[in-house]
Image (cartoon, rainbow, N blue to C red):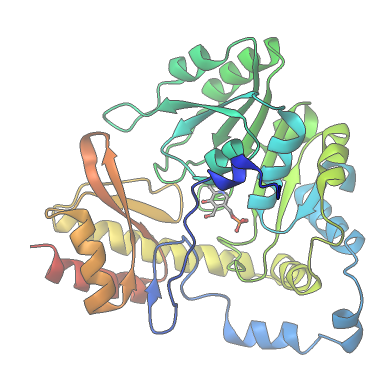
Length: 352
Ligand SMILES: Cc1ncc(COP(=O)(O)O)c(C=O)c1O
């Protein structure tokens, strides 16, 4: 009999079949404007036949990254997007039937991977007012928990943890020997980071991505930061040559071009404050400004707005159902002001 893994057969996945052409995509938390055109051209001008022909060499870029982070390469593992790093941590640091604790709603891949590998994903829900009660996280950390997944800031709630909260959680996790993974995909939009716990301690991993502020989602590049022994385990999981040469070339150029990161942050902030002022002026409750996205409570049914935005305005946004006191709401990626203007014009017309 042909064999099919039932965990795969029963796995629920959504495949993104949206054709991007002509659409403004504000549903995937990308940077809609992307990197400056002249910068892209200058990096591409440096692409040689050898770069394309050879397997990618990771050492140089890992050194550049380590230097940027003030650490050394033993603490870093490059991955093909941070979603891959998350998968490896789950695979290596939890076992069949293993207990994983994570907040919900959140980035859905934590649950997808847990199901894929037959782990028990235990959900810690947000409060009605969309705050997170860390007491609930602490209560969920049983002796048999293997992994705790946190996000800083969270997607889609945009909530963050204070140092005291994180240290309380960390102490509880360490007492029970539970590995912690902190997903910092939205670092830079909210600069506070817990990376030092990953670089200086043990059994704490941070995942980060070049898809968000770095505007390189199409290149696929991320990294896992952690203690050297933990990083060696993650490296063992990697497919051979999982990090492509173009991605590293672009990422190095972003990191080393003076003013590039500041420019990206500046344009993002301008778009964010413009959008927030518009929402406030027009009486829209919103949450989550720590990331590059916002949760907006619409006046009319959220799904109808999403459908009409797509059909009539060629704008893609996301809905989240039953989110505490916000109910069914919209999640919109933040980009440069011109994109936010296009979105708010559409919202003003469709949400009535
Ligand atoms: C919280 C979070 N983590 C990880 C990712 C994955 O990012 P990537 O695989 O592009 O690095 C995303 C993507 O949206 C995300 O929202």
